Amino acid sequence: MWANLRADYRRAYAQTSYRGALRKAFFTLTSPGFQAVWGYRLARWLMRAHIPLVGAVLQRCIEVWTGISLPPEATVGPGFLIQHFGGIVVNGNAVIGSDCTVHHGVTIGNRVSGGPSPRIGHRVMVGVGAVLLGGITIGDDAEIGANAVVVTSIPDGAVAVGIPARVVRIKTGQGGATPVRISEPS
Image (tube, rainbow, N blue to C red; front, side):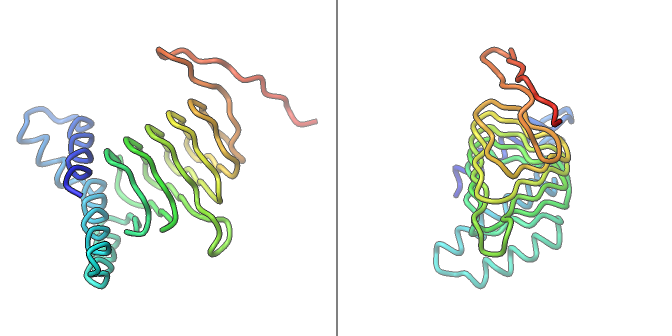
């Protein structure tokens, strides 16, 4: 738990635009995104320590306080960064890799009650208002655009946008990108 929390803190601290170590630390610790991740880590630890009631109460308090629903049943890797306050819902069966970034208004869930949830790779960025649904896989280093609705798997290094989301390019090494030929519907 502590190693993951340190990685979460380091990532949030590095993203803070304030100057000065004390000011950066204060704004990192008081950020609703970091508080939600901190609450998730503690609630997950309590659940694994067979103290689920306290973890559930903590998770609900964090959910009301931050507007971010991140249940302890979800699996979230280290370095998880939530950029902005509120409107984030993550299904308890979702799996999120390390060093992922999620913006506000994102839903990561299933298409039908009890159905499979997304598996998100490492270093994935999910844009504002994006929706990821069902038993899909999002590859490592992928980017999901703002308001995209992702219902099919996305490969490693892909940039996906639209409703429904489609891959518009595949990122290559050193910042280059390979455009993907998109055929328009007839």
